[in-house]
Amino acid sequence: MKFQISLDELIRSGAHFGHQTKRWNPKMGQYLYGEKEGVHIFDLEKTAKLLQETLDFLSTSSKEGKTFLFLGTKKQAKDIVRKVAQECNSFYVNERFLGGTFTNFEQIRRSADKLVDMKRKFEEGFYNSFTKKERLLLEREVSRLERYFGGIVGIKKVPDVLIVVDVRREYQAVREARRVGVTTVALVDSNCDPTQIDYPIPMNDDATKAIDYVLGLMARAINEGRTKPELSKTRTNSSKKLEKEKKDVNLDLGAVKKAEVKGKPKPKNSSKKEKKAQKKPKS
Image (cartoon, rainbow, N blue to C red; front, side):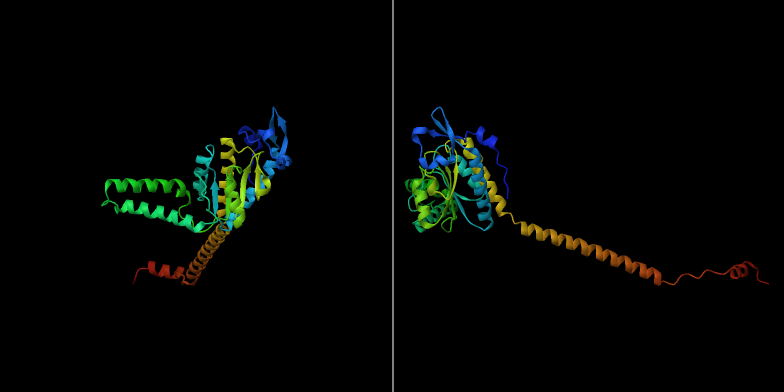
């Protein structure tokens, strides 16, 4: 599936700017176009090509029913990560990646379930009999759990795909994902190591507009992958079949009516003699 990737939009959002030339990773050299005023410039044609491959992968994975986790804890990405993840009904972490999220997943899942249980008890009034201080402590605990686990409530297993903003900052998450076999997708800046990522997207990972644009495309790819063309095709075929059946029924009814009309005895027209006889007065 081809997605509309706008090079103009990438340029306007500042996706082509890398870090200062003295802060680069040589492994990123293949994705760089050059430098300007001491700052590396990305080759956006290569970026667009890799982004297209990534969107195709996300769409296919979504069609297969895989789960996604968006990760971005830097200031520029926090709100965007939450918004985009909610748009495509995926999980997210935008506060702090807790060590063991993948390698010690059962404990993380228990903490998320604890959050759900405590919120339910507050709604049902279970804590009304507690003292004011105890309720305050419980509210603080709910707030803490919401902060760290609110984006992964309902998660049942280790996510299949991890989408990362800023590989250097989230190096621990990338390391755990590789250890347990989670596929990684990431925005990779000029100071990062792209060899640790399965689907790297070389671009500026500090520009808010660039992050919003690219993650928005990812959310769209995930949503489009979840729509089932087979189902719509089946519905279309069934509707066509129903229309055909209706036409056949109408044709049958028309034939029956014609047959009934044809089978009815025609009224006998009185002959001219009978009419004359009727007109003659009786003698």
